[in-house]
Length: 394
Image 1 (cartoon, rainbow, N blue to C red):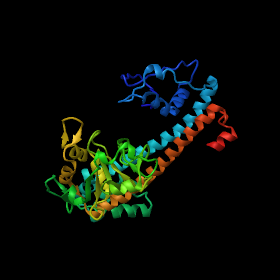
Image 2: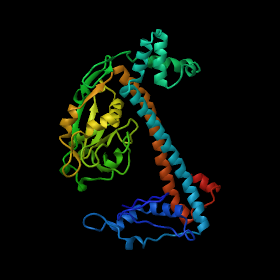
Image 3: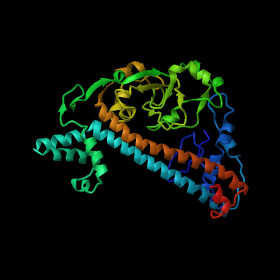
Image 4: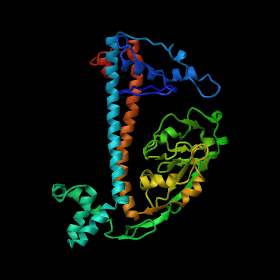
């Protein structure tokens, strides 16, 4: 409760939404959006007096007040803040592209077996060793032979090294045809730990502190990487008592009750060194001697991984996975050779480092935007975007 958003096309809302249609002769709708966004906590508190689910009555919502400069100044303030939001959106779009690249590599290598099949096709056609290698390189890079010829020697050598890691044959298995030398293994065989979060009685509101070890919440499990922010914390001493529910970088967190299908990895660039999973989550600690953590997270993000994850969904009461730890351990999946798994880890880790950098920039820009708004409203900072004092603040 308290979140604000701008609707940019025709939409309908339910009874849990208050819709504001600005009088554009009096208020700029972007300006109003930023004001309401800055008042999220105040809006929440207006409805948080209820004994059960917080509800904000329309009559209370209508009484929210704020200082509004002239319409022209409102528009100027909105332009400044929107320029920051545009930078935030650009970083988000960049991360979406990087994520799509990682997913495409996983699908090509571990679902469609494109490098293997390219080698097989070239081999069956009687191609030379060099042309068989070239076919795999084309499958890996997405480039034509003519485009490969334009690459610098170092890049081409890296592609050759990667292509050499893939076999040139498929063999039968219980999961269908798989690359020769790869195996079907249970998740238990690929993990050093698969465990539940703590009992609810071990994490209560009265145990929360302002800083310490963060508790993971469902809002942070929307993407492939855990998103830091809006955490509750436990003391380090309390977290130590729940050591079996402590998770670290490279661990994979899965929601087993509530919003099913959520699964995220704690990235190497995470804000905190360790976290506590909640009672609605379980986690997997991949055995790095056998498989890379990034291979495992992208497996669970794939269609086949999601299917396996939800195969034991309970249809009674709150959505949940029946006996999550037991059923996770029994999942059978294709385990590539360690060298291929490590190569995937190496490539995708570089993508994730760039995503982490972009996320840090997003957090900084959000903080800047939220800091500027009250200063612009109060007149502490001039609204002229070219003002030296404003440029210094940005």
